[in-house]
Length: 130
Length: 160
Image (cartoon, rainbow over the protein chains, first blue to last red):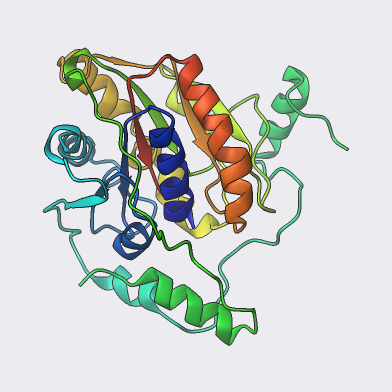
């Protein structure tokens, strides 16, 4: 869904004068949504900017992606990065069509990562319990 | 062969008894704005759809939350949090935010002169919004205004 959101946002920004470059890990959703410039890295979702705790990989992914601003010249073009994830075990789960719903329950309560975040948001005035 | 997420998610929802999700499939070529200056002279904006928020801000909720957050570009890693409807993808971002909110690589690219400047504030949203209408009418215009306020020349949008 994130890749769809990004495609829609990119098209809106671009139509209003801001050049965009979308970086993501779901090739098919980019191909369907056709953002103006897309860069695909074949990594598990959650790692579109590189592997965790691997500053060099993150730097390589982001700098290669940004070169797309110069190299992508056809609207809707998609650039594929050469980076490979160290193993393929994640692919089976990501491709699974089994009825497993990994989403959290949907309601309008902010889902603070830690209880202390909730207190901090109240203290700063950013949020108040309803 | 890359993972076919649209097909897998459609089938998964169907087996759970939901109505099939209608993915956005563009029926027109994308709009285009050329980047007229080199990246090394550009002020770059950043969006991550990962549901990142700063300590002291409200977290995202999971029912088509279309709001956005502005995070200072020099935010300390210890003040970065995440809330996103597909929490299973947050395991690594919560340990190392830069794999989805690439501030560290962008700071380095700025120091090296590859990127002219990173906008003072970077943005996040919770990309797991089902309503394409609400993304178009709420999230996208809010981000356009936010990027304009930051006077960016171009924007890098990172999808989770």
